[in-house]
Image (tube, rainbow, N blue to C red):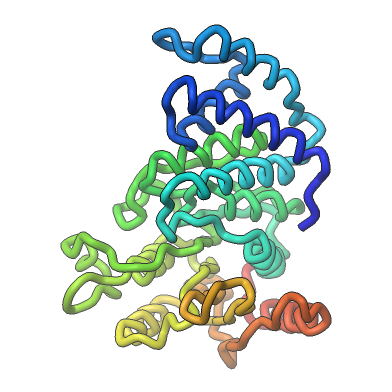
Length: 335
């Protein structure tokens, strides 16, 4: 994705404000990013207990006077915030599950949702592990022909604060819920659930045991439980589109997950993403498309399985995407 040249000057200036706040107020990177975002949104530099110092306030004000987001589209602002967060990832120790979904994958999901919900003028969309919101905002910014209600759930308050900051700077309205995605959700039933699912074991066995996809022994996989929770949250005929490990169904726990999906919905597609997007084979991920029973939903005559070609093979990649779109039009009907 080409970067709007107007993003870079804002990126440099805001990076300087973050560094000033870190030094003056002894903040970590993300707290300083949140502080500078709040200053931008309020139009006033927040001073508490003498910090930031007057000299720093003067420097900050000079820098904020150079920031201009008014000429940027919402998705340019999203990219700006994304790049600022990525700078923070280089400074702070970040869990793998907190890494942002690459834009290439986000745009693929936006295309899938556009095709599936082509007959919908209104759409409710929930991200089950919203994090900093980058995936959700990518989708919202690339579903322009629909009135989309965006919602996100996450149990990390720092990530949610960054998501809220990004949404306000973009002037994109979302509802964010600070809670464990496996607790009873505070959100209504939705048309679509998306998520780049956190991969690993869920530590609270007592809570996991309430789900049909829990392991009989030891900890259960969080991403399996979240798929089940998502299906429970969908409206009849609603669709879940998830980023999952490429070998999702190749573990002993994969069979109960397949059985559960078949009990309440339809497994429509599982497509391995281009290997080149990932560091190694073990890290490779796939797009899983499931549909809840009800409405006009029905099982595709044949589940779509396959591998996306490498993006550099543009003709092959475009052909594969076209075949995927044709499959969705023929099989994943949401009216």
